[in-house]
Length: 309
Image (cartoon, rainbow, N blue to C red):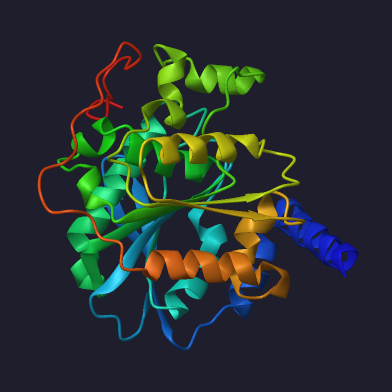
């Protein structure tokens, strides 16, 4: 049975990797639709021409809100690919917002983090208009998108730069994220992260403190793209800092299979879908009060430049 599931997973990954648009359309066509309302191409940053799509239960009222950041090595990707995820999670009671963020070569670090922070600020401001509860706002990301989410909840400067703080975020979940990936062994990644000074300041694991919101980390043991030890190291650092963290290890889903498992189509992803849904729908809410302090240390590096990126 395990061999069969592995073969199905590999075929699914190939479908998305080789025919991303058509494969994504197939997955979305199989996702729940009757109970889900979709609003596409909502502009959240007119200056940078960035938009997002919203997937929500048709009768949503004070529902939990999740902002999903997609992956692509900060070089590629498109929010429209993830309609299957938006529909599936919306059918389970979540208001799902999937935003654009700029990628290389148009921008380099930290511009994609600034874009992500702006999307979160918009989501919080507009949540009520889409049947969501801004006090139950969570982040979700896969691969590079998990990195984006991780940086927003660990390095306080990004959400502070858009007028908020990490107390905006009730919880966050990362799937197959690169959280501790130095040294860089890729020329393009070296170019993307060159503005980080020092380079270590670009790593989420180096910003972890007790103010990180409750965390779910999901990893496949056979991931050939992002070393699973990234997740293991971040989980340990979070635990050491006293952050509530849940770690889900799975087999035979590899890298893309983790996000495909949120399509509500393939039975081998049931554990991931059930865990992610339960976590994002859960009771975790941010504490009242002021945002956590800005993380200041010898490794802090240059300020987040979200005002000029």
